[in-house]
Amino acid sequence: MARERATALLLDLDGVLRRFDPAVAAGVEREYGLADGVLTEIAMQWGRLQPVLTGQINHADWVNSVADALAEPAGGPDRARAAVERWQRYRGEVDTEVLDFVREARAGGIKVGLATNATDLLDADLATLGLTGELDVVVNSSALGVHKPAPEYFQAACAALATPPSRVLFVDDEDWAVRGARAAGLSAHRWGGHADLRYLRAALNY
Image 1 (cartoon, one colour):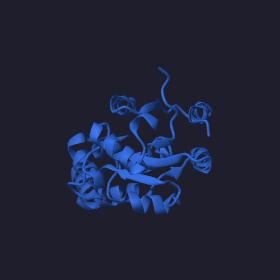
Image 2 (cartoon, helix red, strand yellow; image 1 turned 90 degrees about the vertical axis):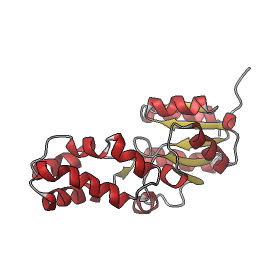
Image 3 (spheres, rainbow, N blue to C red; image 1 turned 180 degrees about the vertical axis):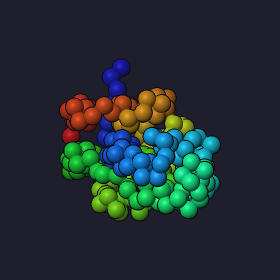
């Protein structure tokens, strides 16, 4: 049996709609004498990251924990805090081709939601990036208390879109998230870059 055509779209933020220039973190690491990649490595340690993605701690507490972990290699707590603050000041850049696609889809009658594992800084980030009002719904793991790829996350996202899972197309750059969405009954596509937009337009048929 053919699958129902999707009438709603869920997009991941980081890696799809927002991108980060790795040169920014690399520059901070060089300036403060830190090993290449250590900022991301420390920040993304799951035991440190999971609490902030589920709203158990706030963004500031998470940032402080990263600085604490970097105190010794940075040459002291003050230098560690300065390095992390400098790194965090950069909030990424919008992928304008993806944003144009979002606007086209919404103009064509497709509901578009943002589905992201994020901290309580998300609303401020969306404002900084000029994305406030560009999406119909925003599903933030830290506000929800559960993160992708949990089925409860995708259930909540579909409810926010007022669309059954079978009519929602989810796009993410991480395979584990795509698999989780499919397990929850959504159509899902792993984002590989702008060449995928042609497929997504055809799938939505707006």
